[in-house]
Image 1 (tube, rainbow, N blue to C red):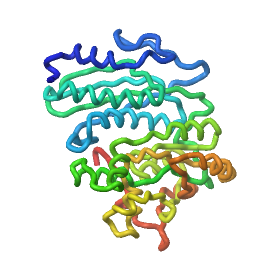
Image 2: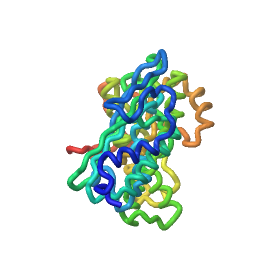
Image 3: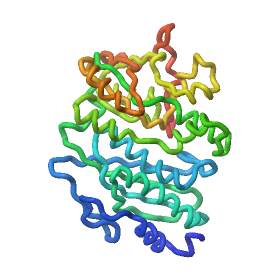
Length: 335
């Protein structure tokens, strides 16, 4: 069925019918000019937004509408995780080409609502529009957290240890596999890497724990690549940093399928974005407490480097010494 058969308001009604019962804090959801919601007493508002553009952020030749719906919210959830906050309310806006089918939108919304339900997020509003050619997705996510617990990028101090959850480089390699295979993996390793790219897991429990226990002094999610995102922490905290190549965590599927020589595969992990792992700085005296805590994290945790005095910048070191960082910068939309 084509969208023109149900129209804009028919589409909105179709989305509304799939929304879960209102969660606590939602006073008025979809149906008015604006939604009405309330925060938990004693918390601050935390806001983030992401714009996803067909042909730039996703390719419909190898991702499904269902997975695209999940990822559209997951990338925002990852931002909230990096602040150590709790997600609450989502706003979704879609600019949709006329050729798009109702069934595609149904599958997209199903994926979006699956992940919103998993993290107790309410879809409370948004907007729809036609688009001449490409699909545009805009998600705004509102969260909350106690002011004293929220973690920014500006708190790292010289001497702090640098940690990262999970493994790096999987998403970039997963995207390359998806492009090569047309979205149809031929092995378990390929399927794993594609899943990491198409269906990322936001590290919300880990982020909230790090913030609630006062462990992370500065934190960011790895969306633009380790090198680029670490630079953001250094710039905001006015510090430098050193990362040791041999410590960068790489998954078994990544190491199995990386097409560059083994001694160079860390470069994909440093440069690649969209892993949505947490990168954070912790005082050395907190190392034991952190490692004991991380024993219960399925994603794992690795100390990859050290925060250095300003203005060293970010240094990546291998066994021979500092490496040339000219080719390690992550994706830049306008570069």
